Length: 109
Image (cartoon, rainbow, N blue to C red; front, side, top):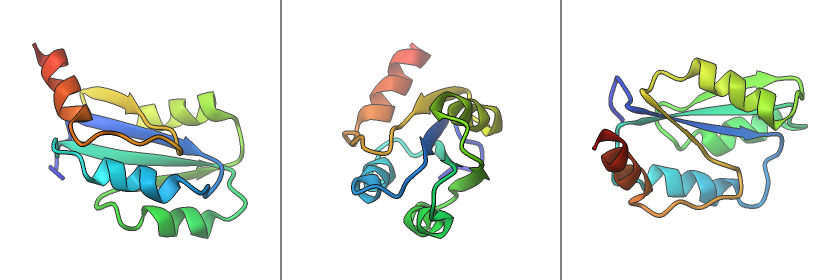
């Protein structure tokens, strides 16, 4: 990761669901490296499991809050982001390795 990310990736979740690890792996496997992850724990019953899941993503930040809903959680993550661009990642999504590099190229063009 770069010290000054171009893209802030916001992942709002209230669970350590069955796909979260694969979702985080798909983010970590991006060919574009100028991103940061802000994971907003929106009242998960096991915050330690969220911390453990995200521990493999260098530089990830976790914000814990009481459950306020996905929209509020995304807003909190977006406000904490340092990037020029914002991308939302759901806790059950998988991104192809080229997703961010293609999006950034399109946006910069």
